[in-house]
Length: 496
Image 1 (tube, rainbow, N blue to C red):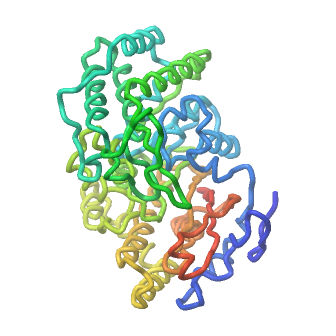
Image 2: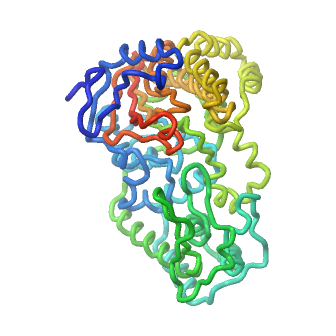
Image 3: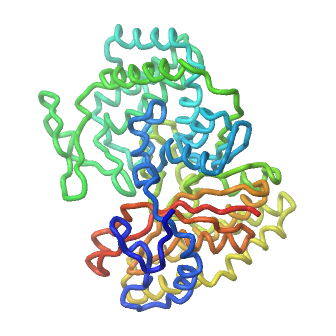
């Protein structure tokens, strides 16, 4: 094992240990430097985790895990390595409070470990429902369905796609009618409910490929004029090109064509998976908000937590996954979902009033005030808020909402950490995958702030794995404040 000193810079880990947090020392950085030094002994550079294994990229060649793209997820391998390192064994019970598409739970299922997940977004919950039944599907039934798809001509639906404002114009009219046709047709088939959920989920996984959109950065992007462009010979024509990304129009292929490809892949995976039967375990994902679900769980329940909360990066998952949410008929509920996310966008409003009422309703208002006092007394959070406010006054921060977003993020993260401490067993380890961020030249060290908050709650910060290939900055950041590499970390916290 190799420990990084505070100022060491080497290879792919260059500049990942910070010698300053404020560009040109404009703002106070005293408290950020204090916790950087305080937790520097925890830093461990590692190649057993990479940016690939800490993202969906690591699942691309993994049967079952690659059925549906979930860009914000981490890989099966990352979970397996952590479960082995934490000595979690058959019969233990683990938690993922930000379950996403279910990678933590699926890996636990394969290893004979019980697991509970909590997930707010309904499309991710549906991904889990489809994948978790991999060992239960009737192969003959799936072959019957794919045979019916082959035999039938491309369908046209009678209903309209339930578009959100952001998704209007995302499909060619013919593609949209075919998509709805398959939705209606699958609903009418005399097949099991599990098979219907799988069929509907496969269709949902194709939305990006049959649309003029791509999930790029923090939202959907598409060319609103693409419907007027030629689609001759089914060629893939660039929609948008620049040095950072390139979007292509795949929508000239029929839904049937892509559906058959995907269905064949999934049947092949299921046959492979069903060649062995994992140990019987208890797996469940609760569809709901982690902030209100964790307080309802009993004390000392879990042996470990492996999770990746939303990053403090202004990414709005309700926009990124707007097509999937529209497909599920979310409609105006999307605004409620956006507000219920852990505050990671400038549109998120404070949840404190609602949280206080909730804690009152369960007879735990004292716990609410105890958590809030931890946030109010944290000098690093106060320093970050002050620094961002100063940058805004200097017109260097382009959106004042970033200030409240950062404060609310750490406030809500403290509620999560406090409840995790209560519901974990003595000796349990919590693993958080997260990124540090930079706004207007001010580095916000999410990893060391998380350790600092956790220590105030009672956790023992155990290790901060630093992954190679530190994250870069946006072009806007670099043009104004220069390039500064930012850590991607896996934080390990232990309950004594």
